[in-house]
Image (cartoon, rainbow, N blue to C red; front, side, top):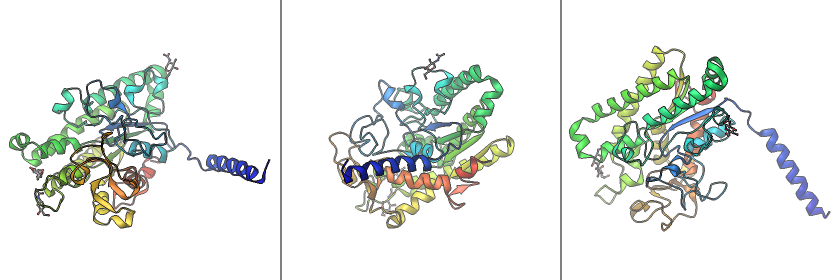
Length: 362
Ligand SMILES: *[C@@H]1O[C@H](CO)[C@@H](O)[C@H](O)[C@H]1NC(C)=O
Ligand SMILES: *[C@@H]1O[C@H](CO)[C@@H](O)[C@H](O)[C@H]1NC(C)=O
Ligand SMILES: *[C@@H]1O[C@H](CO)[C@@H](O)[C@H](O)[C@H]1NC(C)=O
């Protein structure tokens, strides 16, 4: 064996040993994920008529397999990155699980679907995505499977230590912002109040089926996503501040609903993440976080690469780490990584009343 070959095998062995040594211990038994495209890991691939898909290039260009998987991202998304933090494999897309029995669900499953909202919007009635109501229904059948296999107390024990991650609301807010009909029917406050109330009823159903520890991500500054910026008639491509204000109003409602839910059902705990504040800071001060481009999408065509979504014919930027947005709606893996670091370990500036590291130990 030549010196170099020896050195190489030594390095490989060393790398393997140290990766085992540093592999994160599993902190929770399972992670169940609900919501929209920010955390969809491939459910929409299984919807026959949906156009809300990401199972084609250039999505996935930085994923470990370099292939499109249905994630609306260049690489891993927040669901993958949060699973990594707690030492679990990414929960599989529910619709990909062929044997829907308890053994398939022991470490969690992901119900999230691109395009989904709290309300069953028009898209969702046309089979474009799985709305949150239906995701919760799927979860209830998983719960039944678990009870059959583990018994009631075994199931409750498993679930009481598991994380229930909910990332939803952005699509409902964008629907309102883009629809004069919805704006005529209700004021922004009435609309977000109904979102919060509807979400509360769905959370109670999760609670009834064993959920105790919740992770919520509030709505981000969605008036600043590339698809919104290009609608501004000035040349400044500014954020739509009324859409941002709508997101803030929703987040206020969500936070007080969670506090109320916690005081009614005192056995639950939760971590709320202020996505808005974090992402707003990144957009105001990108250099601090390693970004150079906050307005344009990396992948797409036309103004800010936001006229045309990320399709195989679209262009994409050479360095995905310096763009906040991957496509006209979604953050890059780099952005998701910063958000998830803060969801997991963040200070009280961004997490309320605790971060996920603390949530797993309560
Ligand atoms: C349950 O699903 C697993 C795969 O996830 C399969 O190996 C097993 O045979 C199934 N068990 C039953 C009882 O159907
Ligand atoms: C900005 O958002 C508001 C409501 O959120 C919407 O009514 C308006 O059309 C948007 N403006 C543009 C230029 O997109
Ligand atoms: C468009 O940008 C201008 C300039 O920054 C801003 O004053 C205005 O409020 C924006 N319009 C909308 C609809 O957000």
